Image (cartoon, rainbow, N blue to C red):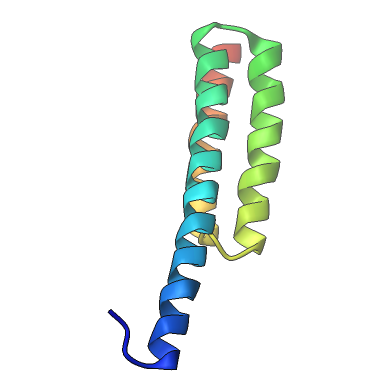
Length: 88
């Protein structure tokens, strides 16, 4: 257990950051999953729409500092490949 004021504050801050990070991780997973489901259903319009939403949301997380730019680019690139394969 924390013995001084700053250690107690760090515990609170860490708990808050952990909760926020969990929310963003879950959000990314759900966004990617929606694109995967649309591709598996072979629905081109739904896949394209889900991809547009995914692209916007993933890059917004870069601006918030949750994801690195290269990580976001890799995720979006892989999603684009999947959707383009479906259209071809």
